[in-house]
Image 1 (cartoon, rainbow, N blue to C red):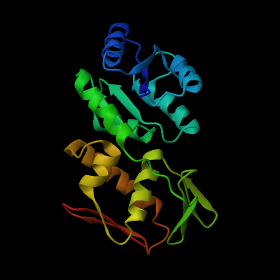
Image 2: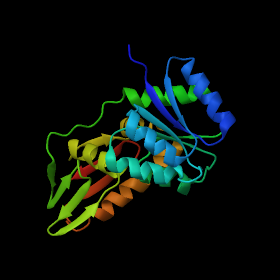
Image 3: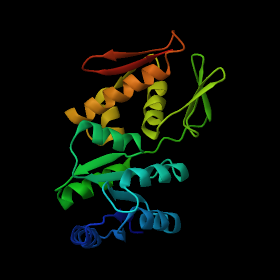
Image 4: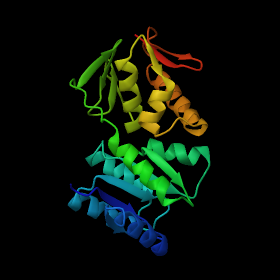
Length: 225
């Protein structure tokens, strides 16, 4: 069986070595970069299965690195390691293409659970490049939403969430299901994050008054179109 290839970008040398050795002892292959620029080069050359990125790094920070990686690969799972705990900081991570975050200090067991959880998820592979939602055209591959001549760019997370809402259009998309699938767990903090993303999608879909995203409190959301 091939080992899972993890790209770890962590500039704190002692922590980086601890994480690297701990993962390798559990049969992972670890590629360790000490700054964002080095990490991008390794990503480009080695094609890892998952990225574990420290947010605060020299030369290129984790958020900038994730944005650049998302241009080349929209689907590779990204976990951010961060000492920051403010809602705005974590939301910035999700906006830049992150799939999960882990606050420092963390246990190796928790990191491994997050890695396996992300890799075990079934990736969205829509058959249609363009999907009609009311009078909008949604291109999941390009992450765009077009109304007449007006095109908006979506983030990776917005695209994933909109696709799942469309799959269940006119029915309730279960809140716990989508939180576990896209955010990794359904805790209160992630639920707050999802509410913010729902609000963003509502604004981006407001040009068609027949489209609504309804909150079914305690159950989930429904895309009506």
